[in-house]
Image (cartoon, rainbow, N blue to C red; front, side, top):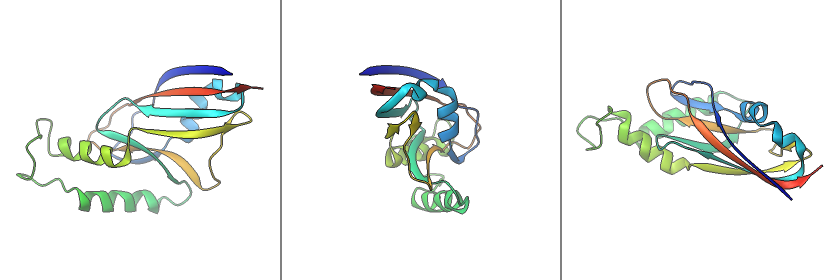
Length: 142
């Protein structure tokens, strides 16, 4: 059994839902050493989240934006925690709904997700930001 852990910085992304599966795999060559195991991926921010969802049709990401903006609207006077703007508390609420981590099986050195699945960064702030994630890999080496 081998354990690896590292923190990587994702490229800057604007508000929206971004598939980061490839970016994780490129920045984590340790994955390739694992025959079977798990990758726990945790974002180190409270205004962005992680999820696994559709990786093929970009309209899914647009629909996420429409749905979550309707569910948690940026409406002046509705919230108290707005020191950094109207997207301050709304991004915290949405990130809690998505969650701060996902766990993905590793098989033969690759993240073992479905054909039509991808790991998403849910960037919930209005400004472009870079984000850091910590990846913990536990598994049997090849």
